[in-house]
Length: 209
Image (tube, rainbow, N blue to C red; front, side):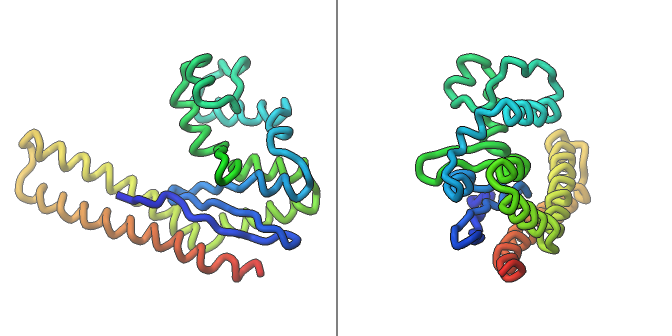
C-alpha cells in the first residue's frame, strides 16, 4: 500500500516559486494561491466567476454522466455540499481532482483550471504555465507512469478473478500459482510506477532551467 500519494515540485517564474503537485495516479495540481499572489489577485475572485463555475460543472457532467448541475455550487465547503446537495462523492472528487484548499498549503487547482486561471491573470504567465504543464505531461517518465497505471489496473482485475476462483473452490493448484505470480507482478509494477514519478521529479527541473 502506498503511503505517499503525491510529490510537490517547485518551478520558478520571475523569481517566484510555483508549486506543482504530481499525483501518483497521474494528475497534476498547481498552487493557485501562489499564482494569484504574483499579480496581487485572489484565487477566490477567479473561482467566483460564472465561466469558472460552468467549466467545473462541465467537468462534473462528464465524470458523473448527469445533467442536473444548474443549482450546484462547486466551490462550497464539504459541510455545505453534504447539507445542501447530499453529494459526498462529488465533493470527494472535486477535492481530489479539481480544487483543494487548506490554510497551510494554500489552494491547489487542476491543470485545466490552472491554465484558465493563468490566462485570466496574465498572457505571458499563461504561456509559461501551459508550457510547464506540457513538459510534465509529455515527459518520458510521465508516459511510463501512465503505462504502469494501466498495467496495475489490469493486474488487479486478474488478481480479483483468481481470488474469486480460489475462494469458491473453482480453481486448482495452477490457479494458486498464477495468483502468486500476479501478486508479485503487482508489487513490481507499483514500484516501477513510483520510480517513474520519482525520476520525473528529479529530471524535469533540468529540462526547464
